[in-house]
Image (cartoon, rainbow, N blue to C red; front, side):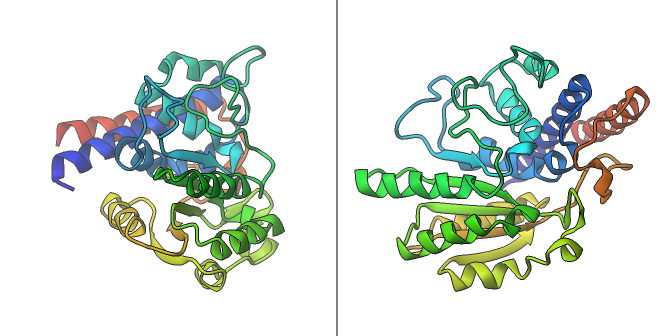
Length: 281
């Protein structure tokens, strides 16, 4: 990509982070850590990779996205709002009673959500079903799903991977947000689900391991995945939990904790400073 495209993606990712933090702060609950680690992935998917149209969110030929780690909905909602599916003001109503944006994605109530999710391990199975349906219907849309690294401790993830490999779902792209932390601590201490690359390879996937915050690396990986034939793709994205907010980075306590007012102001000021620097370049 050229320098202007890359800068715009970086600006959008910063805005996604700002939206996610604002939503969790206004809700007084939610999951900022994983939303921030995945912000660059959300941004690349919705502003560069996927064939979608916010004005026609149910187009049968659109690409699909399933947020398997559904608790990181604040980041997804921020990307959807910035992309034009609904107003950015909706982010302030996150988790409020009667609001459109609930704690986990709801395909019946939120434009742009292709599958309700939240029970960890299940999203990849839904994505496999969508990819298989495309094959059966002769459609060429692609299906993307984002998993958490801790989520990969769920057995259903690997049942779905076995299905995807057996069915040769080359229209499926599985992304793992590998930030190394889950609610109970480092993944290496909780259950040690690594090595992700070797496991997905064993189930018949084409696998790439990249820096999930590098837009050039993201572009190269997703472009390569589209060339793969006869097998599904997995992109293991090494990321930093809480990326972009200094006191949240690599801190497991920010997995599912909302910032108080003082912490919110610090986060907002840091992200605003990052945005100003990007826009001034």
